[in-house]
Amino acid sequence: MRTSEGRFLTTHAGSLPRPRALAELHGRRSRGEPVDAEEFRRAVEEATASCIAAQQEAGIDVGNDGEQARESFFTYVQHRLTGFGGTSSRPVMRDLLDHPDVVELMAPRRARTQVDLLHAPAAIGEVTYRDTGEVEAECALVAGAPFTETFMTAASPGIVAAAMEDRHYPSREAYVRAVAAALATEYHAIVDRGLLLQIDAPDLALERHTLFADRPLAEFLAWVELVVDAVNDALRGIDPAAVRLHVCWGNYAGPHTLDVPLRELLPLLYEARVGALVLSMANPRHAHEHAELERRPPPGDMAVVAGVIDTTTNYVEHPEVVAERLLRVVRAVGDPVRVLAGTDCGFDTSAGIGDVAPSVVWEKLRSLRAGADLAAERL
Image 1 (cartoon, rainbow, N blue to C red):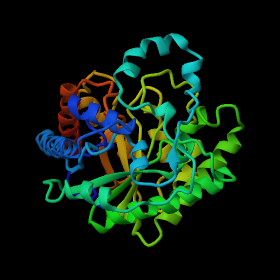
Image 2 (cartoon, rainbow, N blue to C red; image 1 turned 120 degrees about the vertical axis):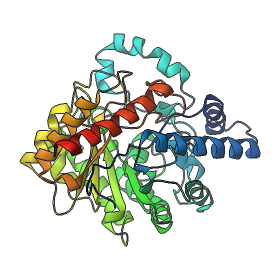
Image 3 (tube, rainbow, N blue to C red; image 1 turned 180 degrees about the vertical axis):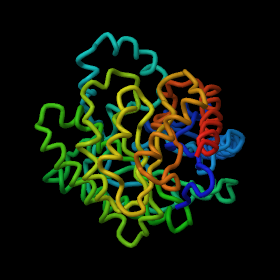
Image 4 (cartoon, one colour; image 1 turned 30 degrees about the vertical axis):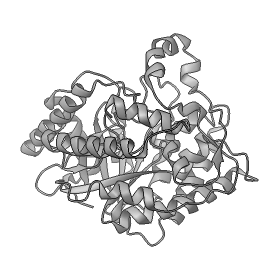
């Protein structure tokens, strides 16, 4: 894993805007409707090439394919894993239930998304990895990409188990372990291609106000322990320096009044066998939590990708703001080399759902680069 030697490296959390036509193809494919395979392949290739070029122009050092080949950050597994079918019923975020008028305001967002994340396929049989054909094809799309380092995202077993209802396994733990064992194939395939693996695990924070909204905090923290342990099992044989773990509280412009504090999570997140944590630190609910990194610094050589760009608002952060946020994290961690500048989450976590206009996404990433350079000058 490359770190910030000499200047702050810039990166992001994974998903970037998809062209509308590609988003519609993803929607049809996710619903099991007919999709012309050649049309889909061409659309993915063209969108990926365009996305890579746009990242380079914006000054992104550690980039990816923008998840152009996927319908969403986790439901894509239905095409790669066995055992999924039917429809799940996912709990709505509790803070949204407390504020139904916010849900009204979010109606246009729901209308434009192509993939229903609250009603994903369920586990109705044994979950195994089919074959590596699709992940190999996706990795091939970024071969030769002009980044300092190229990463590829993959779903956490926890987000799959939390959002894709279990109707097959005897216990929640058995389901999580089965999904982790299956996803280990994908994790290894990505690393074997020489790519940095990013595991997307919003479940390690988000599930406090969804799946565990009515349960004691201790039960949720036991869930975090279970998922981290399952991830570690899936990563067996992989150098931790080849992996980063993305944790967030849900990429939506809601109140977030019920988010679990980072201080409750850090000791458990530090148990993950990864080289970096990707953390949300730009949005108004979590911008103060850089202080937790000072109270409980990351262990060993673990790096921090600090979210200094909010992915739910069309405000473009001024480079001065980016620099100030980044330097606060540096002071907390105590080592600028171990801090990268990133985004709170993805910009299009499900095809078509992004809150930020595509043109503004690239403005934000250009500001990320400018702010990171400004912070480096001040050091």
